[in-house]
Length: 136
Length: 118
Image 1 (spheres, rainbow over the protein chains, first blue to last red):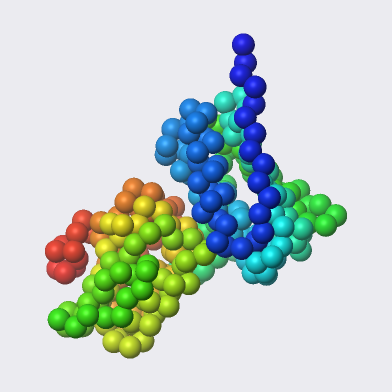
Image 2 (spheres, rainbow over the protein chains, first blue to last red):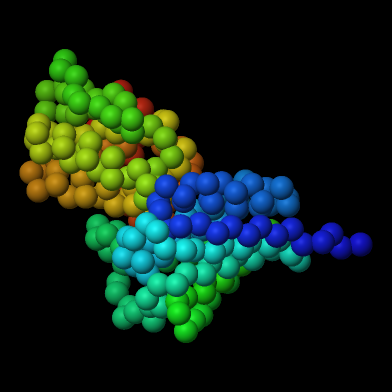
């Protein structure tokens, strides 16, 4: 018998003070569903980086804008969706620039693409939906 | 050995010749990385060290905003031929430095004794 999916839904404001609590909640969900610590740590980092990008870029550092996060464990994978109502810029569509470790910017997206099995940005009429999946 | 100003995220810092030796503490993300930046760049601007040794033993987690502060500090020191040495790295922090391809840019050593020789 397949266990029912475990789902987490969080609504936060775009205040950096909220990042740690969301990251820790996602990491706990992953570990409670049998994901190894190293993998759940990576998922947590990716959620942190995705939210930080929303705060910095989509909301231009405004601390009072909404962000919705859902995380669901299903079919031995965690599926995470992050919805914002910001400027709708798709970071994957920006002109590619060679990564220079000594220049700021770009590391968050690199983490997402390296650590998650699936990453998809879907522009919305009023913002952006980021969906990410990491297999167990 | 003069003690330097500290804050919650840099609980200890001292000057030894032209080297600053500081401990960093806590999980560092976009929320508190500005405090790390203030502490590190403030010390660099005030004391003009040739080397900064950062003991990261009490840092179980950092994100790209914290990495950016370390890089900015390194850039400041490189302008005067200085360097940043990171010690006592926890696996999660070391892993992120490797992904950022910064593990060969910073000097990474096991402990402060080794850092003094680096």
